[in-house]
Image (cartoon, rainbow, N blue to C red; front, side, top):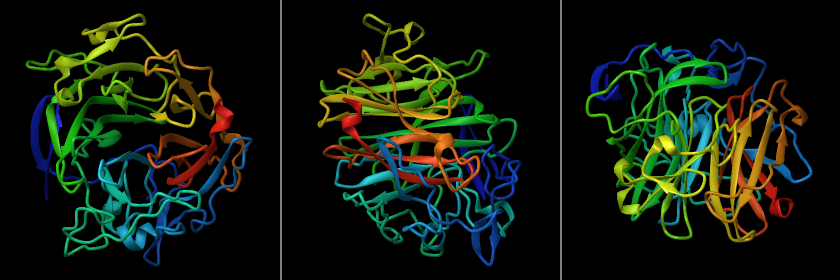
Length: 401
């Protein structure tokens, strides 16, 4: 099998080799606490996936698993997913929620663990109080639960390929998604190397889909390189927007938040007209007092450390809401603001990792707001380090007033 990936500004095609070891690998990687295949079912080394971790804080509760065989979606039986993370979610503009996941494992008794760099699932669920459900997949059906083939109708296919070849490109991971005029835009980062919860990237880029996530096309014009070498024809040399969050402003503009690779940098902000989202030359950046066309002038809108983040407009609060992880303190935090550039409120703690029950070292990361949140509840997905699974959580918005 061959794959195509953008690597340092060039399209490269080559044979896929065995998957590189990531910092959170459920098939017996360097963590030693991952998932192993037992009787055809992906299980944790410490035992099978059980009930969701216990957490019922002053403003936030865990609702249920999103991924994993023990959750309501039975993702191994239905999609060939025993372990995954992220769950970037956005409204596709046609009544569905699309969810993009990072490095994804299937049966660990198969060489390579059925590793996929990323997968996309679809959900019609609008009642999240009892969990998030994904309906069945069907070959060729662009509104079914996953992209599958006739020969593998219970195996979610990879969305965007990567080399999977250390030390050039180990994986390509989604960070943000948005729909504009029926087109899906999914932001990715190319990971060069892992170092625990901090990593280095080659570049970030946008992929587009015009068939509801069935197929994806990387857009080279959107590449933001993160390298110290000179790249002929490069659109931008930019380490500030390696991870992203999209939100539509009240003015109709598309706002893109960016952070450097890893989880320790600050958050920056750019904006662009929706019809120019693939043209980096049309972006302008918040410099602390106004908008500049120079990405180098971008000033932090939220100070470090900011991990994976998501931003949404919330009708109940009448404000923008930002969620992100602070890995230094082991917390998931929320801030609100009247405009995308702020000023952002002081952080409110939604989850304190040390208070999570069930799993030792079971802290959460990567909170992504679910677009079907409504009323006084905010729903978001978050990933758990120890189980390498995705959870759905619920927050009482009155705590953010």
